[in-house]
Image (cartoon, rainbow, N blue to C red; front, side):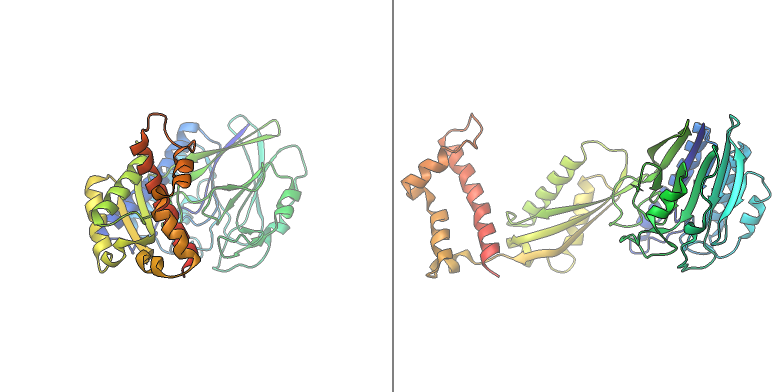
Amino acid sequence: MLKLLHVADIHLNHIYGRYPKPISEKLRNHHENAFQNSISYALAQEVDAFIIAGDLLDQEYPDFQIERLIINGIRQLLKNEIHVFYTPGNHDFLGVASWGRDLTKSSFFHYAQNPIPESYEFHTKTGVKVHLTACGHNQKNIQTNVISQFPEKSDGNIWIGVAHASVDAHKLHDPYMPAVLKDIQALNYDYFALGHIHKREKLSSKIAYSGSIQGLHALETGLKGGYLVTVDAYQTHIEPINFSEVVWENLTLNVASCKDSEALIRLIVTSLKSMHQSSKFNHMIRIQLQGRSKIYNLMQGDVLDQISAEIMREFDCLYLEIKGEGLEPELDVETYKKEKTVLCDLLDQLDKWQDIPELKEKLLNLPIFPTHFDNIQKVEFVDAKLFQIQNEVLNRMVK
């Protein structure tokens, strides 16, 4: 049996420059912890191989702290006779850094630097023979389909492929080292480890992007990590493993019912608490406000930043950002009620539904109320629903 850990797109020296310095420093620390979490997991699982499918770094030259983190982490693996396969991606340094040359002295460290297929053979701890082919980036923008040059599986041993590539011109990222899925499938490998796409994604039962090890910004949401892959008796099992300590989340809130900042704060806090009953993660949250609301004119200057700071004092998260681009000014309903239009008639009926006996009877007998509601509660319930309908009608019929 072969057991390996597949990670990629680690981007260790990423600069979180758009966030306040205390937050960016915390993000960097958690990012480094995520990498160490992957090392510790590989050691605990006693894997045979640790695969880094490109973009270990975000920028070409790591500082001293990052360099020592990489060296010490990989040395732990090598010391425990775990094979480390590293294929640089389009973000990594061009050429082997001094620490990389030092690691290559170990027979367990394999560095596929060039955009040509490089093949290796090794044995698992149980004596199973493995054939692994990989290719790397030695420049920033490789447009060659290198994977099409990989050798096809030709014997009964386990065959593994590794590349930092864009399969079928993946829409999420630039098409560096473009590849075709059917070419990879035709190789008939037992597993093909891909990097470059920051979303964890299986392209088939034996081909997968491990995704990034930690989200780098608000668009990279959810838990991040890698894959624990086992190959046994020609069966491949891929299990997602999470290593990130920080989770980005996006939340869209319609604030049409909010009449002031207090109502907005209550809505946000309630929504956040319903999302996070309990969590051990550090959350980076972006909230998008949308809808026509009375608060539109209040949200000027740094008001949203002040509201964010106030909410963060009550709700435990690493960072909260509130965006108001989706807000629109509230429509003047009374003006539209005075016009002689179909819209005027509809708004009038919504407003005076209790004065129309047939409509009132139909609405109050709808099977939508909790069984314990009395007539007063039913009226309040219908009023709230009709207010939502009124806003929807206005949004649809008024530009």
